[in-house]
Amino acid sequence: MIRPPTASPSPESTESAGRIAEQAAALGATLDDARTQAEAGVLIDLVGLEERVAHLCLAAEALPQGEARTLLGPLGDLVAALAPLAAALTDQQARREETIAAALAGRDDPHTARQRAAAAYGRSGGPSAPGRSDDTP
Image (cartoon, rainbow, N blue to C red; front, side, top):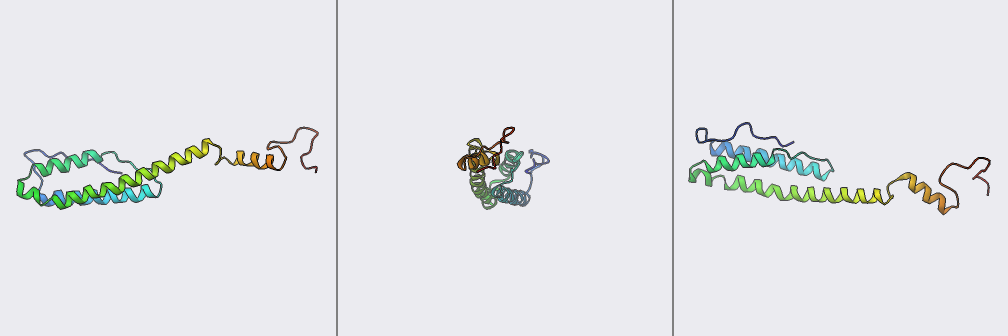
């Protein structure tokens, strides 16, 4: 789960470039973990992602220009971590849509599969009618 930052930066409480870089690295690791989970089919919670990114951007903007430039690498790495996560989420959504479509078409329903198999062999898929045995040749 991606959690929101504990506090937003304000002009009075500017964070250091080192601290912002640490937060960017931690968020990058979180995004990588989220990608791994999404690739495994786990639904992930991205609540707070936008707020955490906004927090880092505001904190970086509050720094003097020279210090802020030192964050180009860590923030660039964070941006780079978003593309594989987006791809994993897109693939996950496509798999879910395929699963739903298959279920709606009856391909994943074992009961429907039994009925089709029984029909192919000339038997009904349901219970026998009273006084009638489907076991006779």
